[in-house]
Amino acid sequence: MSEDLIFAKDLCKTFNGLKAVDGISLRMSRGECFGILGPNGAGKTTTVRMIYGFSPVSSGTLKVFGMDIQKHARLIKAKSGVCQQENNLDPDLTVFQNLVTYASYFDIPRATARQRASELLRFMRLEHKERGKILELSGGMQRRLVIARALINKPELLILDEPTTGLDPQSRHQVWGRLAELKAQGLGILLTTHYMEEAAHLCDRLVIMDHGRILVEGGPLDLIHQNVGANVIEVESPSESLVNFVKDSDLDHEELSHRLLIYTRDGEALFRKISEGFCDRGCSLRMATLEDVFLKLTGRELRD
Image 1 (cartoon, one colour):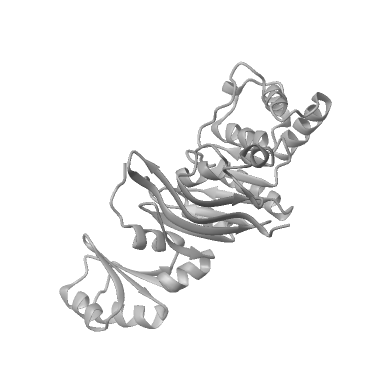
Image 2 (cartoon, rainbow, N blue to C red):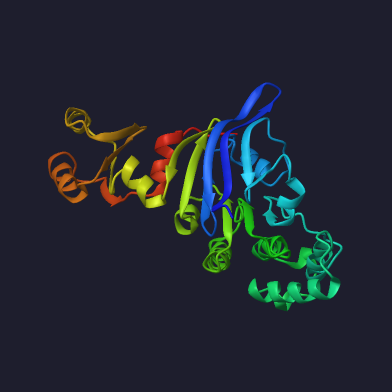
């Protein structure tokens, strides 16, 4: 059996002559959590939709479970669980009925479906809402139910397209806890997200996309160290002398409106030199994050 859960080579998706996905290649191993990050319009959701067979491939190779998606989409869908961005639950059914009804699409026997639904509600901490209606659930509860529904067929691959968008921090961390448990059980998870903390917390490896192409690939910490360094020095309203010092010293930096970011692997020594020699306030040192990498590579302009 192939070790690759997902294999893509030179994968393209074209809409009316526009390449939404432009020749990307990636591999996802069994049992890992793999993230696809990118700003709006980067091509990440389009990529995911090709992977679960919703959107046809324009060109290139795409295999899931070692099978060509263009030849074996039905088999691949049967072994996958998909949690889309929208909470597309049936408001006319109870929480329990939503799971059992969805199980029928996979030809799961009703008795098995009921047992599996009860197990998933307990796992997602929703058993007390079993008889409740969808509109009675909080946003966090609805997201957990959508994930439970995606697990009803015991998939080998769980695909999550921005699973915690719009959730409060407590609900987001509850979802993270459940996903961490699934990952510990060996389930492969493909994740798209706008939350850099989420990607850093859950993903073993990830790619950052923009304009349909992959910019970087690797583990979260590796990407931080390779593209930013260990620390970031932030200076509000930097002086001209500091800007000249940074440029003359060939330090990796970004000049923003009224703010200067300096990326470094020697944070404490450099911070001491800058704070003592160039600024007595508005100067701070912090650990570098995945968000620093994301913004440095994709820019800081708003995307619609």
